[in-house]
Image 1 (cartoon, rainbow, N blue to C red):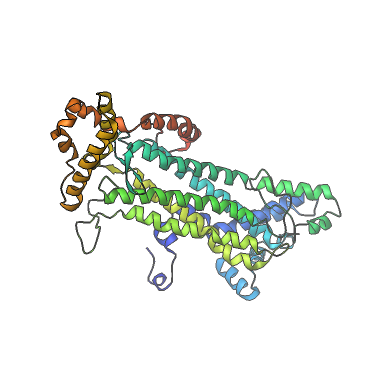
Image 2: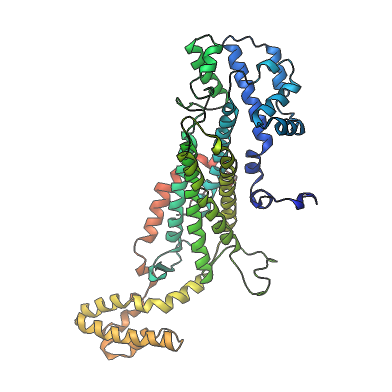
Length: 479
């Protein structure tokens, strides 16, 4: 709970209200500045190993103070110097007087800034991916897979489908998102040790023109930081197209979740499916009967923010002058963390929705009864033809009866009585005994059950299998 003083300041709802502790910490000042110090230690260790006059005592001193950051001193230094990296170099040097001469040796600000961002992006993907996989698992195990609802075309009643088939449409989008998240994470490289404008000139001077040592320095620091590769070519910064690649996968995830939650909101309005609703939850301050789909609404709201953030890295990358311009800095301080925080929130909220979705089969059956007679007309025509009737004549009779039944529904507010009209008309006497079979909803769903089974077996199960050991929940795909 925030103190009274904190209530006098704007606080981002992304952190104060929604995001997980893990993702909040991933983009925190504490993690960022600890990572800066670790990167300075990696650099010193590699420089020492390659022959620069750096002592074990200096490195030990830096390691002993890697996490005890005097944030007040750093803030005061930045106020004076107007430079965040140098403020922390001075703050680190203050508690490491022996190592002070070699901290940040040969490096530029982007050595700590960009490399730390890349570490945060990689860690951010690693926080998101298990949550995305669990969402796949929950939807894969969604109950009542063979309940038969109306499908929709242009939000008008179309043919019938199954709840499982509809969930697979959601799943298919999430499967693509998970693969994109994995690819974006695995494609990340380290900026590495590239110097002021990416030429490594300062390090070439430090090693007296020994190009092999400069190359080895880059490799050693990259490995210490946990990356397999570094970008071979950079300017002062790594290419800002890397940010586009990463954030585009998050924006795409936002679009998927928005679509899923919009569907749930539409179905909630029809009273066919509802998200969990707590015993003491209030849906409206004025209308006590309301059961608003507030979690799905939150996902849609935040997903729009996530999608909108995609414009930032696109514009930033497009206006980077030559080797770098500093107008990317303030924007990236906001757009990178907010994208990951927002993606984290919508996945966590989607978990709350998917693990407690409630389906109301009786409501679905009632909706089908209202529409199925119209949908069954083609089957009835075919049955009449098989019994020796004329297709065109039958079509005209059903057209007239359908219009009459539609008038009862639309003008009188009554039920669809097309079936009763057909039963009363002597013309249809030859097929009256077939009507129950002709109106069986399961004959209208095509290959939906088989499609669900095949999709889960061939697309979802192989994707989930490698992650089973790292999940807190058991993966059982109900086919």
